[in-house]
Structures are given as structure tokens and as C-alpha cells.
Amino acid sequence: MGRTRNFYLQLGFTLLVCAFLILPVLMSIVAGFTENFFIGVKSGLTLRWIVVVWDLYAPTIFRSMYIALALILTYGGFRDFRTSWMFILVGHVLYTLPFMVRSVLAVLSSFDFRILEESAASLGAGFRRRFLGIVVPNARSGIVAGSLTVVTLSIGEFNLTWMLHTPETMTLPVGLADSYASMRLEIGSAYTLVFFVMIIPLLIALQRYGTQRIKKVGRA
Amino acid sequence: MRRRENRTLFLMVVPAISVGAAFFLLPLARLAVVGATGPLGPQAYLAVVTTPQYLEALLSTVVLSVAVTATTLVIAGIAGVFLERNRFLGREALLSMLTLPLAFPGVVIGFMVIMLAGRTGLIGELTALLGVGRLVFAYSMAGLFAGYLYFSIPRVILTIMAAAEKLDPALEEAAKSLGAGPWRVVRDVILPALAPALIASGAICFATSMGAFGTAFTLATDIKVLPIVIYTEFTLLANIAMAAALSIVLGVITWATLAASRAVAGATAAAAG
Image: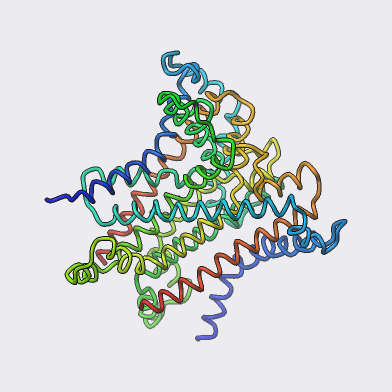
């Protein structure tokens, strides 16, 4: 296969872009495990910073998760949340709603569900039956992909949460900002590491689900 | 039958519409009113362009966003078309690495910039090794520029890849067989075909750069960009009317950019079709 000089030039360029995006991630992972980042890895590796982060921020780390999950599980039933919680929840719903809509719409527009619905209607299926029996199952992959996007976005949302948060409703990115502003670089890195550990499985699931969906649509 | 159907469908959008109205439209209207009822009155909106401090913040935010958008489009355009066109070993891995930062919040991106260009950053280490002194630019406009690039590149790459998938290879073949060189093909075939995607993703890139807060907040609270100025007016100076007026101006600019891009990209798409 004849690769031209042009191919390698472009490959090199793309690899450079990738380095710009990935190197800081790797550095921050290393920094989270390093005794003293100013000296470098030769100062020794340690789990100390992770422990510090765990002690300082454990509740905030999971609070984002709760909000994100609550978002999906209780669309509509907020009764268990305290008022301050509801504020952030509503904010997150508003912010993530378009992504869910877009994801579901993309799946629905990739096949002609109107024909399916019409044939069901001609066989006498009512609205509820058609909605639950045809629209929801067919849109399922879109709903799952949308949900994963919503969780990811909600975990990472900062601007809105920062304005609305109280010490008790602090979420992960707010904790991150706090640690960047007031702690050592190693602690900030360790906290970022915790963030990566939470977010990367979600991203992998999202990517896998996304490509599966495309394959399926392609086959249909 | 038809009418009942429509009513059921309408009932199903009611929750979305009412949440949107109660928590988005009403607060927005209130914001516009608050902006006009401070000590300056409606003049507050005028003050955005007549007060040098605000005007400067507005202009530097616009310049920064335009620069970020232009650079992102060039970088992501090249990388996106390349990744869509070629199949090679490790392509999938490269693609996942390029899209990993999609989920990073602004604060984390700020931290990534500190890793790259901070006091112990990679770029500083490299320039120190090369003997040109330690280059540190994380806590300035340049750092913000790097951060917004970091934020935008993965998003735009994905859009460009989706658009490049639909490019018709026959057109390029035709251009080549008529004797067009590679640059000519890029200029006359690929770029016009990608124009709608470039315009749409460029507008989103511009709008997010205008309003991004987390990155600037992490890097330094004294970089004078509009979102930071709004934040300072609101929390530190308790100048709520001015903060509201600035927010409305920021909102109008980003909304207008997005609307304009939709109109232009829509027209281009129609013309191409």
C-alpha cells in the first residue's frame, strides 16, 4: 500500500494534536502519585495524595454521582431532595436536556418509525400501546446513549454548580476548583485522578454504545 | 382521531415546555429587567460599551474567541479529514485519545493547561532544556487560548469527521483527473463541501469560548474576560445590575452568532443540495 509523504505529514500533525491533548493528562496522573512534583518522579512514588483527597473530599466526589443519577432516575419526582439540592438538580436538568433530546431524535430520525406506528394503529393499537411498544423500544439505544451523556455532563458541570452550591451541595468539579486554588499541585493532581477514574468507564461505555448503534442503523 | 392525536402529543411536550419556561425563560426575563433597574437604570446596557473597563473585557473576549475558533477549525479540519480518510493501525486508539477530553469540565482543562504551561509545566521544562529560559504562560491570555483550544479541538474533530464521511470521492477524482493539484482539490472541492460543518462547529466553538468560565476561573481570576468580569461584579462588588446587563449582552452575542451560523450554513447546505 503506497503511503505518500502527504499521509505521513498529516499523521504527524494529528499525533502532535493528540500529544497536546493527552500529555497533560498523563502528567497529571503521574503528579498525583509523585512525592514532590517540583523535584520529579525521582522524589518517589506515593499514595499519600490520594489518601489526602479521599479524606478531604470523599463526600463531594460522590455527590456529583448522586445528582447525575438522580437526574435520570427521578425526572419528575424530586420530592426526596432538599430545596438547595433541587436548585442544582433543576439547573443540571436544563443544561443536559438538549443533549438527551438530540440523542433520542438522532435515533428516531434514522428509521421511519411513523410507518411502524401507522401499521400498529391500523391494527388498533392505542396511543399508550404504540408509545410503549414501538417508540420507546426503538429509541432505547438513543435513550441509553443520551443517559450516559447526561451523567458525564452532569458529573463535570461546574459553572452552574459553582454559582448555586453551598458547602453541603458541593460537587466534584467544585471540589476540584477548590483543591486547585488552595492545595498543592500534587493534591490537585490526585483529585483529578479520582475524576478520571470515575469518568473514563462512562466514556468507554458511551463510545462502545455509540458505535454499536451506528453499526445497527447501518445494517437496518 | 387526528385531533386527539395532536392533543396527546401536545400533552407530552408540556413538561419540557413548562420546566423550560419556569426555570429558563422567566429567570432570563427577570435578568433583563434587573439589568435595567440598577443605579444606572437602562443606561447600564449602554455602560457596557461606554465604560472602558467593560468594553475592553468585551473586545478581548471577542478577539480571543475569534482566534480560538480560527485556530481550532484549521487544526481540527486537517486532523478530522485525515482520520476519516485513512485507515491505519492504531486509528481507533488515536481517535479515543483525541475524544477523551470531551468530558472534561472547564476546571480540569484549566489544570491541564497548568500541567502544560505552568511553573513546572512540560513546555517550561522543554524550553529550559533548550536553554531559552523557562516559558510559563498558563496564567495569562495565552494560557486561556491554550485551554479553549483544548476544549474545542475534540468537539470540532468529531463534527468534521461526520461531515467528511459524506464527501463524494468521485468529485475529487474528477478534479484530479482534470489536472488539479492537491491544494487546488482542498480549496475547490473539500473546503466548499465542508463549509456548512465548518460554519456550524465554528459558531459553537466561538459561543463556548465567549462564555467559558471554569478554565479562566482555574487559571486566574484576574484575566479580564467577560465571564470573569461578570463573576467579579456579581460576587465581589455586589453590582448585580451591571452583572445582569453584561450577562444579557454576552447572551445576545452568542445567541446571534449561533442564529447567524444556522442561517448561513442552512443556506449553503441548500445551495449545495
